[in-house]
Image (tube, rainbow, N blue to C red; front, top):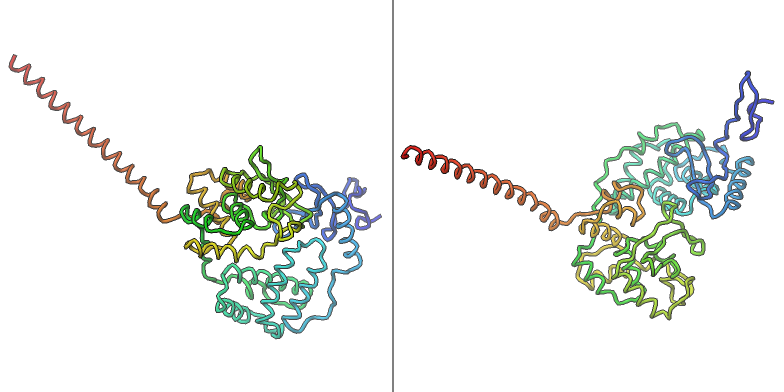
Length: 410
């Protein structure tokens, strides 16, 4: 039997030594990773070489892996050999391939769909032979003219490079991906806005809606994301321990961003708001949503958060922030209170302290001046020490000269 005919994991005899059949990197397999059931496709290490999809159970992982492998065997993921003549058709073919991939997260597919729509608005009817840097530069200029941020444009260019790499593998395009859509000098991303301590108090006091008051307190005082807030039930709040558990919620079709559960502490002010809301709701059961919809049965969507946040900011007379920037405000206020960055990282659910410090903690000019004042205190302390040493030396010399004069007179 040839090595290529062996099943996955079968041990073969070849050349006097035992060899193991290589795993087909295109096939998916069910596995356990960090204590969770996952589906893994690809092998080896490095970015883009392994794809992991989290599942609720081992049975679901095996079912998803088997479904994907059947599609691979039947060639369902292969596009027709006819090369698209225009860039818009090439982008559609790339998106179709991604839509047929059962291991792709829905949020990632939604982002790809949106980015492809923006790219097609600029270069839909452009022939593939004109797929060059000038074409991409025109798209970047149009998006900058529309007032889009560098982060948004960078995300679109990333999807374009993925589509061009797909076209190269299919033989539809023979250009250089990086030369055409890489290394653009985009304007620096503006720093996120955040509420200072006095502004945070005014903002919370200006909220009139009970539902949004709870959501805003969870974002500003616990650093929770909007998706985490609307998918929490009362059973996730441990009133004795003073914590809220953030984990996957199949009923809300919610999964944590990093795939791991975490525990968020509840400070006294947040506990007061949650307890008042719990009592006003009539002491609901543990399976009831903390932030429900109008019928008190369905969970509330996050689309209205932005509008309510802006209304509260304008009513309080503070700088306008988005709902997600309340999470940035939480991290910045914890940094202002000299909370250790490791605890801030754990509370927000980030993968590293460096990411939390670089992207979520912002510094106020007043706090910067306050910290810079420590330098003046240091200089004053050293100046006082130096002056006391000089005075001591002068006193010692005077004492020595007085002793010598007394001895001479005797």
